[in-house]
Image (cartoon, rainbow, N blue to C red; front, side, top):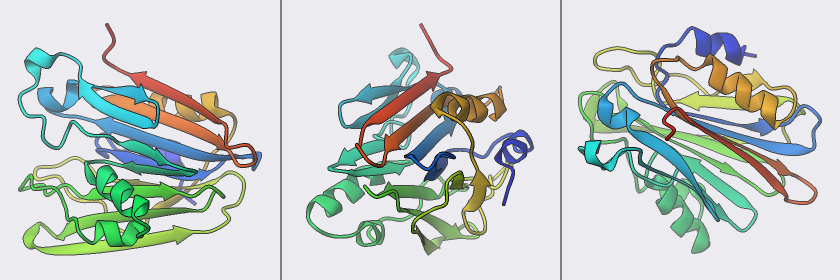
Length: 233
């Protein structure tokens, strides 16, 4: 079990991160997704909630230098399933699921981001209606753009207060090293406000950009959502 508070506090640049799990009272599935940025282009973003998910958009359109890889839908909902990813593979997963195919089939058509020398991993999650969830990371073979590595993880019937956390980068660097190992098993406590505050307060102040959290009631399907954007008008 990893202490997610200490883990975030000790890492100035985990990049983008996904947390999926179950609330401590066992009543809700839990989602967290955050983005960080080092460049002006990456920091010039906000989360905008839509009816069936959220999207990123430029906070100041005049400062948007390159929309590729930073403007996308991180979260989309299909029936009782929620897709959360760090890129436009959200749409790939959505289209495959809608066609009756699988999360894994969708991601086998994708690879890491073409942003050498970092070759940022694509991280993805799928929350099922019953609270089970899946996580995936697609990354280069130690920076080799000709060699991809695909990892898939399935979690059935998580215990109350149990979640798993995956992020794009191991830590800051140049180039930035990709996340290594399995998703981290972490403990989460309290209501959605507590969960949201815990994540936001412990992300690096200089690099954090936006945070999305959602609780999904496992009996009723009712959702509660929170969004925090560092950029506010």
